[in-house]
Amino acid sequence: GEDVEQSLFLSVREGDSSVINCTYTDSSSTYLYWYKQEPGAGLQLLTYIFSNMDMKQDQRLTVLLNKKDKHLSLRIADTQTGDSAIYFCAGPGAGSYQLTFGKGTKLSVIP
Amino acid sequence: EAGVAQSPRYKIIEKRQSVAFWCNPISGHATLYWYQQILGQGPKLLIQFQNNGVVDDSQLPKDRFSAERLKGVDSTLKIQPAKLEDSAVYLCASSLAGLAGAGDEQFFGPGTRLTVL
Image 1 (spheres, rainbow over the protein chains, first blue to last red):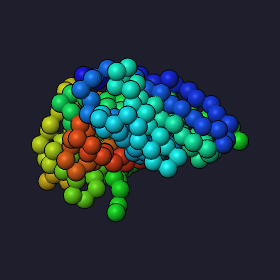
Image 2: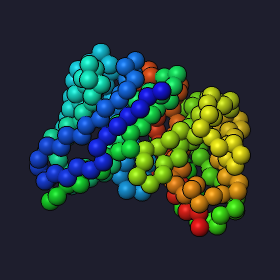
Image 3: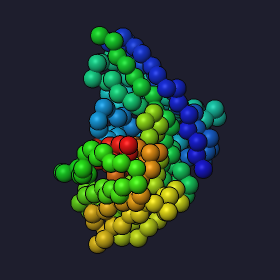
């Protein structure tokens, strides 16, 4: 099954760019996802990328996928205090009908 | 569109007691998931239903955990008896088709935070 690794913490200043990194093990992963979790809330899908793409941009969010290195990153441009949250990378698990989540990266935005 | 509803939001029990959580998925979603999220970890899938049938419960501790989805809509997750290590947030999610590998989005409820003393 899939194994997903992320760094645990990231701190940036308001207005700077944030880059959250993730590595995965299953080379057959078709879709890779980024979820956001705010305190006391469930997870919210931010964006996803299909494995035949290298990059996907959606407003302030840019997802980069390096299939050779099995590396996924999420860049948030012009980071705001409202972006403070935990960000989870996820890939399909066994049978491609499940999600395997990383431990999450806690993003702290300093005003 | 109403989201995934869960209740209660918080529950505190003593070890060896029983507890039940309720989930109402988004209308029309065939697939329902229960996840356990221990503090500092990502969500771990406990059980996945497709309509009212179980697709995968391989990570459900069946000696103490049980779940049902009668009539293919609402679902209940029960723990009996609870242990200290069951302290976690229990998240319910739903999706249209249950195909994460095909880009099927999972929608999450707010979760139930369980504390076992």
